[in-house]
Image (cartoon, rainbow, N blue to C red; front, side, top):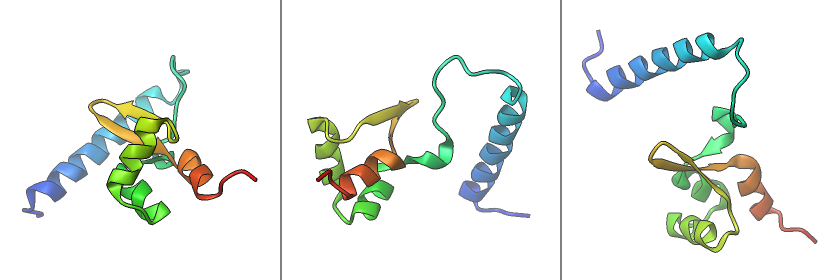
Length: 89
């Protein structure tokens, strides 16, 4: 049995997420849905672009990168992050 509280918490959250997904599978969402795997944290976005986390914050503040609030945290769409990586010609 796992004793690390973070692992236990993560396991429980994954279980709850699976239950919620199963419950809402047959219902149409009332808001536009963004799939979980498309959302990145600031750290993940920074790692992907090979820039600092503060640079990602600056991009968001300047409107160069659209941020999405998920509860109290901010996430970025992978598609938007990749658009910055390959600027338009």
